[in-house]
Length: 220
Ligand SMILES: *Cc1c(COP(=O)(O)O)cnc(C)c1O
Image (cartoon, rainbow, N blue to C red; front, side, top):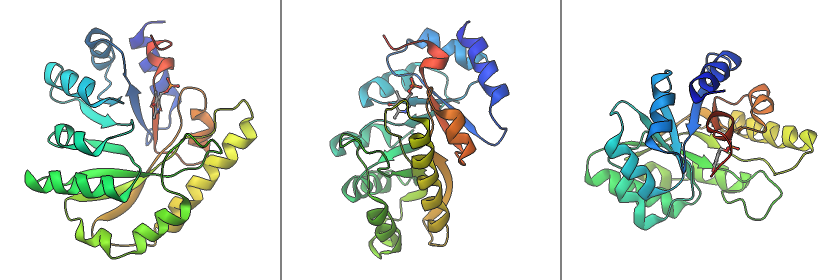
């Protein structure tokens, strides 16, 4: 299967209202262009420098999603052009995005990463921390960010019942949080599901799947 075929196949399998984010970390511009010419416009990257280099040399209408761990000191490099930051895992990071976005007069769309997996290595807010942040007053002062949803990753396991339970938990949290109507919070997106578990994520209400290896082959 070619990259273009993989894109077409995935799009035919996904519900129309679910956004396919093609995860292109470590992939060449050539591979990305093949996907782009097959109609793919949303791409996800994990590393700031790699993202900046690709954004400079690839078509301007690509919507770049940042999905990796973001260090505060690198926020300024992506804020001018990034379409959506999925991986906001602390209030400190959200404040830095707000500060850098304010300097250039942009409002940057963000998802809050919530920890649903059992593994210690997965970062993000706990469900309680997430709800506290949305309820609190501090978020109202961050006028240059807009929180448009939630992102999560399941435990790396073959136990699909566990994966399903974790995605259901995140979906439930998003539903609960929908009641928080604040000027810079509009929870519409639920970013969950990767190559190995996206069908389950979609069943549980995902609106954005982040898929790498099914499109581009296994990572180099
Ligand atoms: C690499 C990555 C993906 C894509 O993973 P695949 O299993 O290759 O589909 C999705 N989300 C995040 C956060 C990633 O780092």
